[in-house]
Length: 139
Image (cartoon, rainbow, N blue to C red):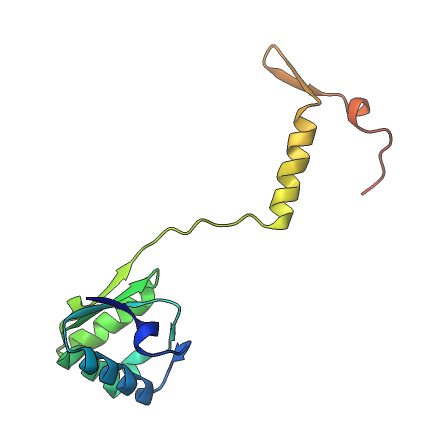
């Protein structure tokens, strides 16, 4: 079974031990092996929370983080030190399509407009400024 952490506990940030206790209760209610996708929830230093360690140690779960390799590595180190199976925690790398900023869009539009004024002859591009601009100023 796969669940998002936010389905088990409706918060934006988990930073305290009592929050992990609520996650444990939600896992126990479902009472079956599951993969928990940790996305859209900010996790702060879970290795300092006893209930987080209990969750990993005593329940048949896997925590899957998205694009959070540093967090996963720190949790894996905690698991190794505490004798917990570190394969219960993994990082999934997902490429996200970046949106262009308004400045980038404006620059691309200006570039396309200027491209029309370049004349290519024998592998050499020539831009006659007078074809595009009627006046120039300092900046």
